[in-house]
Length: 219
Ligand SMILES: NC(=O)c1ccc[n+]([C@@H]2O[C@H](COP(=O)([O-])OP(=O)(O)OC[C@H]3O[C@@H](n4cnc5c(N)ncnc54)[C@H](OP(=O)(O)O)[C@@H]3O)[C@@H](O)[C@H]2O)c1
Image 1 (cartoon, rainbow, N blue to C red):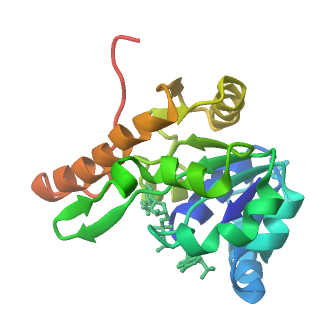
Image 2: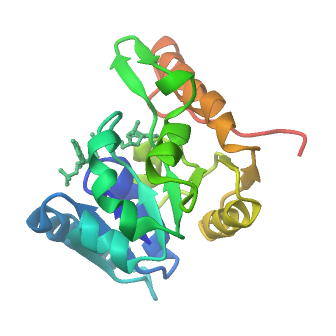
């Protein structure tokens, strides 16, 4: 798996969780040095946690990571994908891209916008073209929970996408993390997920919490 912009908050947590299951993870960055440094930190955490059989974590440029991996994961701030994705377009053709981005335009109070009346995920799909299978996931999952490898993820992961096979593959991948993942409908339902993320941040403020997330009941 290649994590595009894997050097921030969300990317390293995802890398840590997936590598702990034995998956090879490529940390992508605009800077090769930064990618290698963060990959080294993640590898050290896996070692310190005594994870046996962890996947290798290495650092590459976003372009090299996107080229090598069969599945990508996009963890860069909105709306930087408008300039960051076009150079990666060719490398991602025919592949799955898990879109984690949320179109925040402010955090105090948490506020998102709807790119072109839709969601960030739909805009990413438009930027990359039909041959890239964009699947929205992890949009409501706080980075701090992903990073806390010693704690099981208790929240559910809702997964949106228009390609049923790609969505099923992403759900299987997420289930490796020992977490529940659900098919939450077409990619346009990312509008709901992205709005929900802003609402969760507001709830964090209101109830003085840091990492509220969601879990379905009755299923
Ligand atoms: N943080 C969370 O708890 C959380 C939860 C759910 C969803 N999300 C979403 O996940 C995405 C990433 O969040 P984050 O908190 O990890 O963001 P972040 O730490 O602010 O940034 C992640 C990485 O994006 C890259 N980046 C920044 N500006 C860029 C640009 N102009 N072009 C290309 N790459 C750029 C940087 O990597 P390099 O400098 O190495 O290139 C940076 O390390 C966001 O869309 C966010 O809304 C975050």
